[in-house]
Image 1 (cartoon, rainbow, N blue to C red):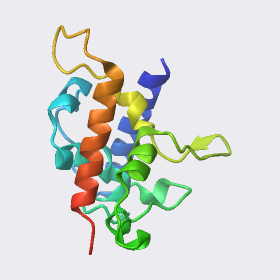
Image 2: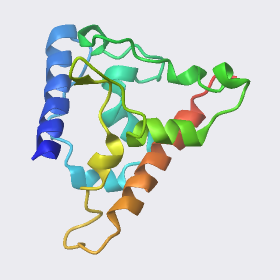
Image 3: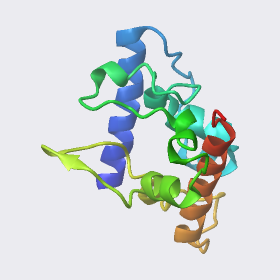
Image 4: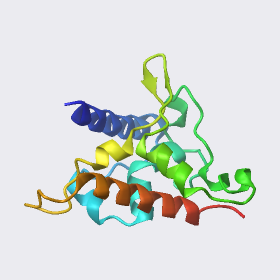
Length: 150
């Protein structure tokens, strides 16, 4: 039930960002969680992360104004770490291992938990959910590495 609520909230954020800021094009077809299994890193990022982090990853997504906290510039993670991009740190944040909860609000969705409920195809029930979640998080991390400014 918590998962469905989180998905609904994320969808509402996209909708309200599009209505409020006028910069987001709302997809006519809702992204089904089953589709997440087939998305490349850039598509995954644009569908799940860009509303806050911006399509370029520099923290200027259309929903930023609705958030209490700022959104980090994902293009400068390596530059801010002596030129080293840390997959481990980025993946831990995406997965949800480093949660910051202030005044009852989380800072971003726990995508690792969300991805555990994604099925890679119809009728596939024995797929290892934790492995799949880690793979999707790694796919996102690889994409974020590709947008680093050097």
